[in-house]
Amino acid sequence: MKKYRDWGVSYLKDLEICDDTVSFPSFSILYTATDHTHILIFDNEIHIEPESFYFIPSNSPIQVIGKPKNAVIVWFTIDFFVDHLEFLKYLKTEIFSKNPLGIKIKNTFLEQRYIIRHYYLPTQKEGINKLFSRNILRNLLEFVLIRTLLELNPKMEGYRKDSYEKEVANDLVFILDEEATFKFNVEYYADKLNITKRTLDNAIKSIYGCTTKRFINAKAIQRAKKLLQGTDVPIKNISIDIGFSEESNFSNFFKKHTGTSPRKYREQSLLRNSDLKTTKITEPIK
Image (tube, rainbow, N blue to C red; front, side):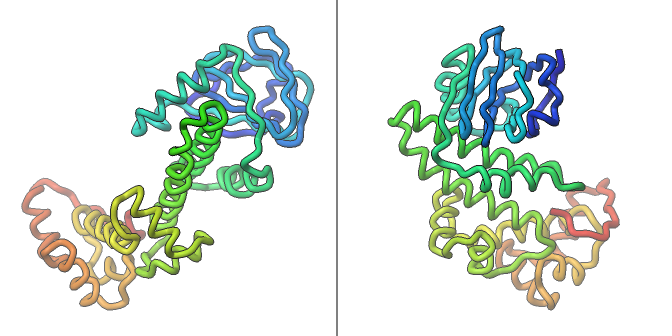
C-alpha cells in the first residue's frame, strides 16, 4: 500500500494508484472535475459524479477504478489549520468524521477552470517557493471546506464572509512577500488582486484590525528590521530593497514607525546580541 505524507495536490492519473491501494494518513479531498470517478474505499464501491468534491477520512484505504483523466486529489495534515482551532473542530466532526466512507458534495461554487488556473497550475511551476505553494493550497482548502460546511450546516453562514475576507488578506500577504520591493500605494495592490480599494480595505480591517496602508507599512518595517538585525547590507541598499529611492526617505519612514533611525536600530540590535554574526546577502530577506 502506497503512502503519502504532509500535503500535496495531484491528478489521480499522475499518482499511478489505479491498480493499487493508497492511504493518506492526513485528510484528502477528491475533486472529480469532468470525470465520472469510481473508487473503492474499505471495499465499498462508490461512484462520484463530475463536478463533485469527495471528502475522505484519514487513513482510509482507497483504490481508483478505471483511469480518470481530469480528477484531482488534494491531501493535507491537520497542521494546515492549527491556528484555527474552532475551524478544526468543525472539519473533524462535520466533514471528515461524519461518515467512515467519506461524504460527497456537489461543486456549485467554484468553476473547474478557476481551480486549475489559480490553484493547481501555480503549485506546479518549477522552482516555486514551497511556502507560497502551501499557502495557495491552504486558500483553496479553506474556501472549499467552508462552502461544504455551509452545505452541511446552514448555521455556519457567518463563515462565508470570513472566508472571502481571509482569502483576500492572504492574497495580499503573498504579493507583499513575493515582490522584491514594496509599493506604498493601496490602489496598486487592489489592482493586482482585481478588486476595489474599498474591498481590500474592508478585508484587511476585518482580518488584521487595521487599514491596508498601515498593514503594508508594518510588513515593510518587518522586512527592514530583519535586514538591519542580521545582515551587513548597507542602509542605502536596504532603502532601495524596501522601495525607497532615497535613503533619507527610508530613514524618515523607519523612524516614524519605530521611534529610532535605521542606523541606531542596527547598533542597538548588535549591542543586545553581542554574539550575533551578520550575514552577507545579495537579495532582500522576506
